Amino acid sequence: MRKLSIFSLLTLCALTLWGKAPKNQSPEITVMTFNIRNATSADKENGWEYRADRVTNAVQFYKADLVGMQEVRPVQLEDMKERLPELGYVSVSRTGDDSPRGEHCTIWYRKSRFDVIDSGTFWLSETPDVPGSKGWDTSYPRIATWAKLKDKESGKMMLMVNTHLDHRGPNARREGAALLLKKASEIASGLPIVMTGDFNATPESEPYSVITDKTNPLHMTDSRTISPLVYGPAWTWHNFGRLPIEKRCFLDYLFVKNGVKVSRYGVLAEMDGKEFLSDHAPALIGITL
Image (cartoon, rainbow, N blue to C red; front, side, top):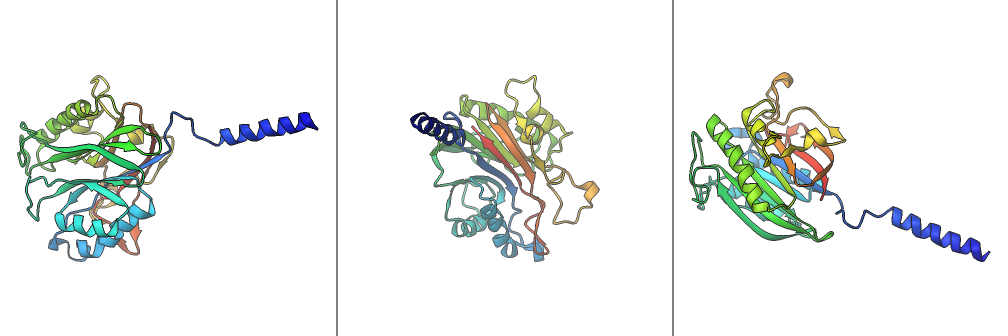
């Protein structure tokens, strides 16, 4: 009986340990990228006042720990601060001032999970430290906002970068992509990196190639290409459902680097009732550091 009791105790201990994540691995982090479409009266029935709850409900339903949002105007930021009290944020206007039309690339983080250790914004231009600066053939000032985050559960650090490349200037997209790699590597100093954004670039385009070029030691990896589980359609931009399926494409990505492990990837091409969340579908990944 004594031998049986010792065996039972050892078995119980083994089963208890088996269910735990390895000590040096963090629990899964859910990361979302989401172009929410700016607040403009031109959208009429798709205006922000009708979509604010849809957008924030999606973030809460999927329990996103980190969200990179693009096209966030100040009125939208204020609305979401009220609706997402569990999330903190890092956010700076691309115009470098308090203009109500100045769009932000906002990083949201779950306050119970992360501490922000450092943060900042740089402009995608020849003078990245000059607020409001425009570069190359860009149509608007374009930015990347970043945050160094400490995971309270594992104690590990990571860098998140969120951006929005220009929709008109091919040189601005190419040079902006190269600058993103350079700055992210400098800021991270070897930390795991997740870079979210609307890159206005398809997987066949030059900016995408710049970012994922394996011959460049600064390159990053498209999380979709390494995820063991891929869910949803092969596109993110649908223009509020107006684009025919065959013309829809990827513009939104979650790139990773420095040991980030991707466990799942999905494009959330969903509607709330009969209405779309935005003109882009959010994409989501599960990662471990």
